[in-house]
Image 1 (spheres, rainbow, N blue to C red):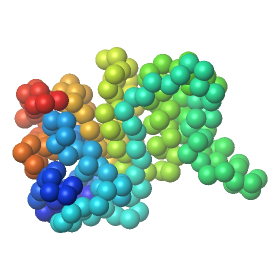
Image 2: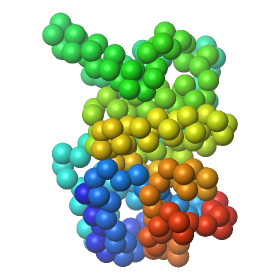
Image 3: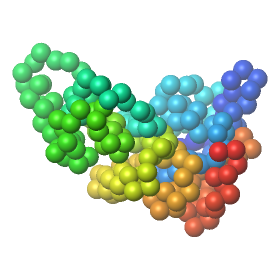
Length: 222
């Protein structure tokens, strides 16, 4: 369970949001929507311990490790690593033969989970946009997170590729009871994949059931 009580964040005199109150139960697939600059990413940074709250409470079980998948990033064609090597970047280097064997098994499992096994030797620079995002997803899953944050992870991808990535995330959500927090400006994906939204508006949030999510919520300065 993630729970916020009267959560407020300021940068100096600038108020980002105030008195946020919400709960996100284990295993929920929820979206954060609203205009750019309304506080979505700031809230996620507080969840991840990268920013400090100004006041209020944000409770996350210490055992709830967090995986993070960033927005799509273009990678040069001559990028020197293949997909498997790229995923391995999130592992700590070890000289222990036993630990290396464990890490190799973990990589095999994660590549299988993310449907990258047959593509593991493909140079990342030559991979498609969807394959690159799956590689970031694989990295995020290495530490067996209980919470997965997708930060505009489908932006700049074709519609079909977006659906493929989100289908995979939904499968992981349902199979492993993975809590998913999806920051997005995509109305269709929000309606299709998430159970409800936290709508950032006027320095606070409104909880919106999926049936009540409307397109105009994605047009306010996005």
